Image 1 (cartoon, rainbow, N blue to C red):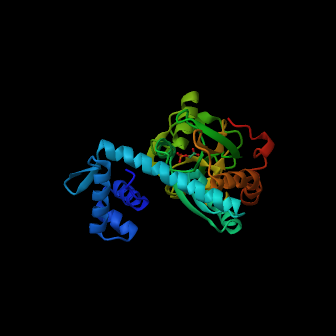
Image 2: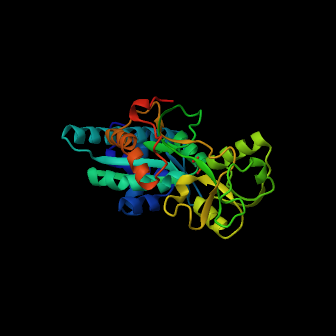
Image 3: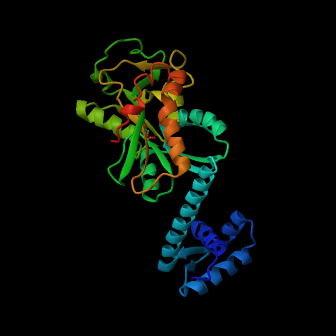
Amino acid sequence: MIHATLHQLKVFEATARHGSFTRAAEELYLTQPTVSIQVKQLTKAVGLPLFEQIGKRLFLTQAGQKLLETCQNIFEGLDQFEMSVADLKGMKQGQLRLAVITTAKYFVPRLLGPFCHRYPGIDISLKVTNHQHIQERMAENKDDLYIISQPPSQPDLKVYPFLENPLVVLAPTGHPLAGKHNVPIEKLNDAPFIMREPGSGTRQAVQNLFEQHNIEVKVQLELGSNEAIKQAIAGGLGISILSQHTIISEGTGGEFAILDVEGFPIERHWYAAHLSGKQPSVVADTFLQYLINESPAMAQKFLPGLGQSALKSEELAQV
Ligand code: PGA
């Protein structure tokens, strides 16, 4: 292995990730024969096959799998080193991989603008997905930081609460219960309802509350997107329960009303989290501090009434 070069490891990692020489070549701006020669040389240095070819697709052998994990550790270590050097030079530079649950997509991009202006050397990739997929990404150590609503018990995480994420009953403006106060939760029985998809944290929270109160709604439609649910509500298909952040742009008074139903809002928080075994990079740590310090003021700007009870930094005990 002492003859393996960093370049060969990069080529191997891209090939393994794509399961294809051609796609690795495209990503790395190399020719396909160059990629396959590099992998061949690396295979020789290892002394065992790294891939098995079945049809057009490449599959990693056991040795290939081990080498892929080693490569990922090496590249992560090098990235960390680069960020630390930039930090020593007084610059914040590097890549930040963020994965956030769907409700946070209404707020996090608004925070990212000023953050990127303050730290122009930081490149951000943002993945928006539901609770279950975030958990899968955590298990594969795909990101530097996560924003979630409900910290899972596995994997082991360090979590930092930073803002409220209330779930509210959303209905079209003309709904008969709109404007009524303290509506008993039983009124939701048999209500035409639009439900998020299995794997969604919102859906889980809603189902828990309904179970607690023996409520059975009539699920008209199941949709995997908060935005699609909003359109369905506006179209008169039913009511739903969504994060209040989903109406950050339009608020109430236009197409949507928040129903004042007993048991609501379901109180939740957003948490920033990272794997507890993983020391956050300089860049991830910079973003974490920024998030904790700036998000309450930003929330008050965009969501007056929310964020007032956002936790203060001194209250940010790790959960
Ligand atoms: P979800 O998560 O996209 O999985 O519903 C949102 C939330 O838990 O706030």
